[in-house]
Amino acid sequence: MRKPLIVGNWKMYKTITEAVDYVDQVKDALPDPAKEEVELAVPTLFLESLVEHTRGTALKIVAENCFYQDEGAFTGETSPLALRELGIKHVIIGHSERRRLFFEDDTTVNKKVRAALNAGICPILCVDETMKRKQEHDKIVWVVSQVISGLQQVSEEELARVTVAYEPSWAIGSGNEAATPAEANEGCYLIRQTIAHLYSEQAAERVRILYGGSVNLANIKLLMQKDDIDGVLIGRASLDAATFLKMVNYQSC
Image 1 (cartoon, rainbow, N blue to C red):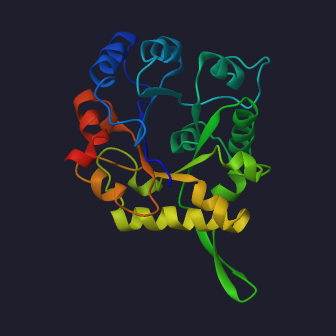
Image 2 (image 1 turned 90 degrees about the horizontal axis):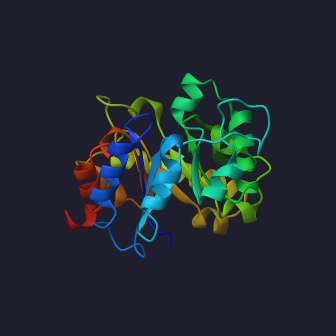
């Protein structure tokens, strides 16, 4: 049974004062962590303070990005080893904004995935909907190219530590139309089928697959009811503490 995972992604918003105030509002009002995991991806500048501020609570702090080397002359980058020492367990890699605005290609994303795994951090691999059908012998196989490239040289044992987030680019951002729950589930299902093709059915059943793309109060419960959606990656809607609390407590709505 895959435990639901809800991740709020702040991106480059908030000051440290605002961040601490937000965390104070939510950290003690979360669902039972045995039934649902809740994480916040925050700017690198806030990581150390917020890890300490949430210690002993159900709220876990996540990194928004990391580099693919542990150390070196890489001004402005963040070492995965340094993240691990802070107590960071998850890092978002290959987010659509990193690909679009900072020109991260599939090779770079894969290097980051492997660097995070090597450092003992679990990557949340973000992928778009670049899907196509491939004829293989007597059957059609769905292939999700960014999943295939992102998992290059990742072993089945390591795969157990990877979460995949499906981000259809047309559904991302304030004001855009979200995918319907059925469309979102289909994308997650096709990703799971691709993972099964790359590894095994058993491995694919263990991987958590999140949906990200204009997730809000109106659609989260319907999304979370779908068989192949194990959680959500929430952007703008996660910036308000009261709204985020309602979303993570969607089962009581």
